[in-house]
Image (cartoon, rainbow, N blue to C red; front, side, top):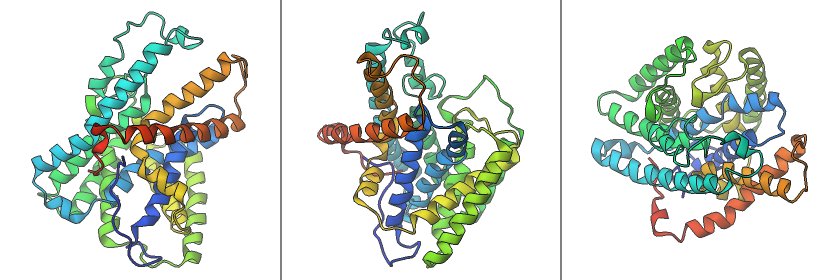
Length: 350
């Protein structure tokens, strides 16, 4: 399974050659896993969260073929739902069963005290991270579904440039004036408008063939400058959380900071050939994205149960790195098993 399609590679060293995006997807996926692990220094977590979600929406838009935009609206919506809604439900059920099996064990028992066994089911229908506590990363699925369907429908009436400008301006206004609120719309009907901007920008960059034939030396300079500006901007804006629509101390910086992270990731990704590891992670992002959270919890729980680490263990960066690597490695046999299920044949991307 993969969230994104894999266009055929063409000329070396060009942004017409899309296989380098496998590196970008793999980097993004590793950052997601690290960001959800325990022990990572707070400043690194803030840096990761400043752009890792926009990166995936940007890549999704970047890899949309223009021919897909000619598909009728309802046919496209049906395909998007087949591709993403079915895995969303299946991964939710897996996380729900894991939660039921472990909710009365160890520290989790304190967190779930008083909760009915059916309480997580609400999250399946709202699609909000706060309700999807059995597996918070699942919120991304409804958001991507709504984003992909809305962008495709909008391009029936808007040109490439108009869609990019309108969604970009709308997202900027939303991030600028949105105030933290306990009231959210279900299925990411609020956050998807911000996601749409990165999705549209990704499609625009693809169609305009930006950064075409950039030499490695220039890519490296772009990477260094973008990273330096990213670190500076993140330091000003502070902690952000796309899933909960928290855009930092200076929301006007949010989109700029995210774009700097995207630029730095793309520039770095284009410097190296795609390795087998990067290709595998890229191909299986749709699986790693939801299940890594379960594996991180499982690794921690097993280590505590075996008394390999105490319950009050001071998690550090070593734990973060090792547990993240193990969580991704555990996905290998899981993917092997999942591919043999008939329902796992939805490979095409929205």
